[in-house]
Amino acid sequence: MSVVKLFSCSICIVFVISMACGPAFSATLQTADTQIIRHNVGTAVNQLDPALSTTLPEMNVQLQAFEGLTRVAADGTVGTGAAKAWEISDNGTRYIFRLRTAAKWSNGDPVTAYDFEYAWRRLLDPATGAYYAYRGYVIKNAEAYHTGRVTDANLLGIKALDQWTLEVELEAPHAGFLTLVAYPPFFPVHQGIVEKHGAGWAVDPATYVGNGPYRLNSWLPNRQLELEKNPYYWDVANVQPDKLLFTLADSDATALTMWEKGQIDSTHTVPASDIQRLQQEGKLSMVSDLGVYYYVFNTQIEPFADPRVRKALTMAIDRQFLVEHVTQGGQVPAYAFVPYGIPDINNNTDFREVGGNYFVEDIAVAQALLAEAGYPDGAGFPPLTIMYSSSENHQQIAWAIAELWRQNLGIEVALVEQEWEDFLRSLKQGNYQIARIGWASDCLDAYSFLKLWLTNGESNYAFWSHKEYDRLLELGDATDETAARMEALHGAERILLQEMPVMPIYFLTRPYLQTDDIHGVARSPLGYVDFKNAWRAVK
Figure 1: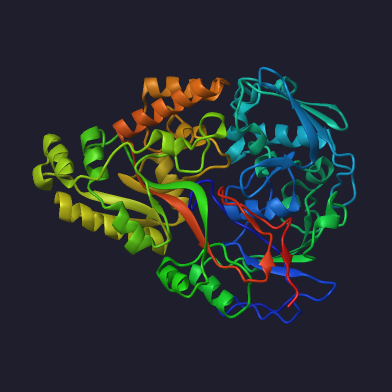
Figure 2: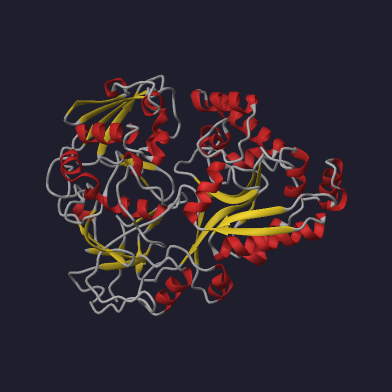
């Protein structure tokens, strides 16, 4: 998050604040004329450019300050956003979006189809350096343009037909496209502002122009962001809070203390060590995250090039024990890679329920596999390390798994903790044996999980390759025949769990705290927190 979609956020300050003990809010939270909601987003924010952000908290700030062509509700349904309507061609590869003529930027300028054309081309321009540019590869010629094989941006399947009409052509039908364009990489940006102020436009409230329900008013780095209602937003009449105050406490323990002292109204998450107490006190809320927590094996080095070793390690841990006694967040043990909550055929069934489990925990079988691979009772097994990014939760899970492997397989394990940037660099360079990671999707589509393991995939940190898997994923991405597509995706997941380059541990949940007088906050299983329809009850 950190899970790789990979999260962060911001706002300035009108109150005196001390992150050691929480901000000392002195203003009235609500009167008959004023509403303020205070939310901790979970970590610091460096910049808020939709094309460049890589973290969920940053994206959650942008979700308030911008709006895509569509907007997704908490239940995953797609509604209108900057576009009031759209048409899709019979073959599913051509979209015509009709923009709202009432939509305006937070400086009063009209939002047009040319703004979307500019923003999407900028996302895909290799000179921009956008980490999530690959999410646009569904668009015609996008991958070729981003990788330099095509140099003419006019060949991209992105064209403003006029001020209010955007035409988009895809490489192939894509079931989740309307969801995809609701999120930050596909937000419009104001061309005049970006080109006038360069990279600085996204770090200065004075130049941070968006088209969403709120606009950035002030930003105190590493402390707090203040957003205020955008008077130019097309639906401003239905936006109730006058201000959103987003604190940037990166310690879950600090955020919990702030919430219990009444200094914030809601949290991003809570410390695992406090979940049981908060549940017993009736304070904890929980939302499913569309994500999976897993360990990845570096299949290019021994002994992890051997599937028998990978399977032995995967089958030798007790996931129910981990979620009940270590994580304690209501997580669901994972015996497959794609989580629950993703539609299968015709949206009438759940992909995970149809696919079922692909393995079971069995210590005897795990021991036999390890012996067959040449390491009976762990004898001769090389020194083993688990690498994880800095986090108390990741550390506790790694400790528990290391002990289970020692008890059940006779393997001694060392733990290696790294700061996030170093951790990500080690993953990309293959400087690890086993690493903790996770994936949270940006759309309700099994393909978004399974594409990670395509040969030479952007996030294929296992360096695993399988020709039949790649073939099935190509079918799963390209075909618009629902039954055939789902059959291909299920077949690919089956291969993945037979080969086991990854070790699923649990499907994600997000425990959080929110005061009883806050209503209408949409917490999506995709990890987004949307305050557009939020309101605060008068006490």
